[in-house]
Image (cartoon, rainbow over all chains, first blue to last red):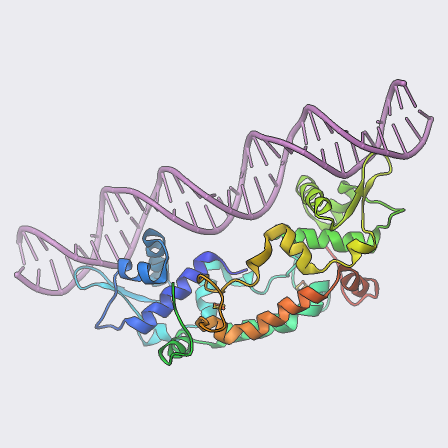
Length: 143
Length: 143
DNA sequence: TATATAATATGATAAAAATCATATTTAAGA
DNA sequence: TCTTAAATATGATTTTTATCATATTATATA
Ligand code: FES
Ligand code: FES
């Protein structure tokens, strides 16, 4: 439903949101360690995120990754969509042809309300907002 | 979070619940087609489910798979646990070391209520109950 | 402008999940 | 008891996901 790669990407974005700025870019190796993701792996993901405009980067000395205003306002869904593809979250929980209100599967019947709430939240919450919770000490980013 | 195999298993159980009985056992090939899962693959899953007492079977002529009273009262969580292992559903959505109320990650903060509701539902709903919705025409089991 | 530093592009390898294939065992019924 | 029909056990293959490795390109700064 939500891949490892997406989780790693979210962690990376949150780490950048709380630790970087345009004047304080962060290198791959300094991201990989604190979020506990293999360096070469997160490097590849970061490159993909740059291409999709979810994060910003600069090469050469003093280079690294950071988030600009635009990046900060991306939502969790934006990240998941880029990494996992669009419709993983909305697909049927029994992997039927399609998830359908008119012909709901038995799980749809009992779970779709909760699922919709989750999707709505992921759609609305920006990286910036989530990072704020960390800064306020209400949420944490260990390992 | 919830694997393909688990989904297939759930579909198989629901199919058996609505179509089989001890006097009307169903063969692999007659399960595979309607639930749209490769025959050899579902066969393997069914064998695993028999071993774990989630479904019943008999070999030889007139043999096949079916559900007894006990099987009918298994929950969706029971199936997922057997196929995917215990703690896939309760693990941290950012794959931190552990999901922890005291040191919640930013996603925990916004999503755990909905997730808990889903888990609770999966824990309570029996195959029998879900199958009933199908029989009543409130839920459907296409493909 | 030369050097060193950092991301980028590309692709190889490893591990896990999904799928396929088949010989063996059990049991019903002729 | 023989034949045949079914599950069972076992393992091979394929596909996807995760991971690792490195040559290339861009840029700050000495
Ligand atoms: S989740 Fe199965 S139809 Fe919606
Ligand atoms: S979901 Fe991350 S700590 Fe609970």
